[in-house]
Length: 154
Length: 350
Length: 115
Image (cartoon, rainbow over the protein chains, first blue to last red):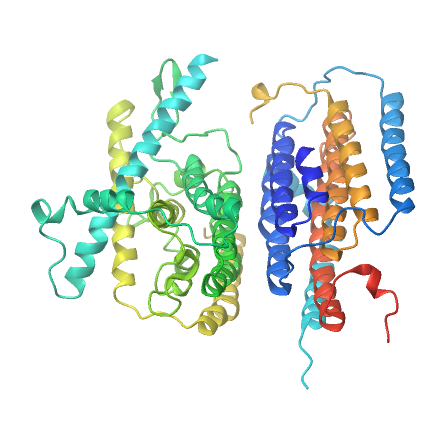
């Protein structure tokens, strides 16, 4: 949580990205504790290891040294915005608490379902369509990114 | 519960000691080995055959003045070498050193001296941690207030992420034939022989994957012929130009540590880990464990020598050649290997 | 993690963390002008959604019709990560294009796009 705030508030973009790296690593740890090993590893590889490296590259490419202060230039928008968001967050908490009143630890049947084998089986059987579609999406994203990033030949 | 902690502590201590003593040995091997290949004498003044040379090197590095250039972003500058070493040491917790011989320490089983035996996603964990190694290079390049360092850092990280893909796809073939991500099970799947003649190591059916993986791992560890990021003649010293004494020592050490991990990975994934070539290890208990550990050590030593050998034999790739090789050659080859293994398994051969 | 090692965890804590992270991310998206920072906050929001999925997958893993259905939560997280990666790639390419055009990534300055 601390790292999330660190990712949003400070002005140096490096600080933002690096605290996000730590945040994602911490989330991977949470996944692992919940028994989802495969997802934890995937989270680190994809998010920390690839997406954030991409962010770092862009920051270094565009040489963004300092960004503007948090909330400057927004004035009253900032105040209302913070109120509304805090309200939404609180609402989510309240609803979740009401819907699922058991506070205590519920032992899951997670046992061996977090490893690669069951997930792989499920991906290629029940969710086959979504899996193939994601492949298409990723190819489209690659093509789009390459096209958008190209230099115009003058 | 304390028994568990004690067992993990013993294994961790073992792994750390082994890795940290191998680094000075590697330094010596590199210098004498390069001398041998280049037809000259290496360091031979300090101790018999120059064996104390690494010790003197460490002393020299420690007593050098710790310069920190002006304009450097302090936190990142100090963080980068720390990340480098932390990551290279962390990858080792999933590697199996010995056979699971039913040994117990403090009443708990020691499964082949893997520090984290319950890590079902062994290989994926190693790749996850290795993908974080990019950060140490990038941050070092950025934090030093120096455009050559920045170039070196960006090139190194671009190289690392390109070859990461080839590396991962090359390993998928092994994963398919072993049916598990757990490294000890991958090694177990390589015991025995085919038709009594050829050991069941993964390199034989999947030579394409083995070659691709080896090349990719050379690129990942920034070793020649892919060492443009730290090329001595091109970019001063690349991303660690601005580091002196301890910082430089940290990067130097982390490079050798990465090399050791890479050599261990090649052994475990493709060359049968701790299996003897034609004979199954018949002993159980301490004898079996030590014998298999010895076999593992010999194989890893061979690959580390191979790393040194290649470094002083081949010229360096130019950066665009390097990237072209990674994307246009390595990835298709790795995919070809993947198809080859898939077809082979479907037809019942592997 | 073997079954014996998994200590049961109150999943409501994880849900609470997810809500807080979402709020922080949303505040970041609304209140920052720098395009990169907005994107980072967006990623935080996506991750908080993932965390909520994980919490529920953990909680409801036991009572399912088939064994495969118990994995639905985790599969969804997997897809969300993939989609976030695709979107990050395209978004960053857009930023680079915007920067080339305007020489600034302040989104307040990108309000008249053609001239």
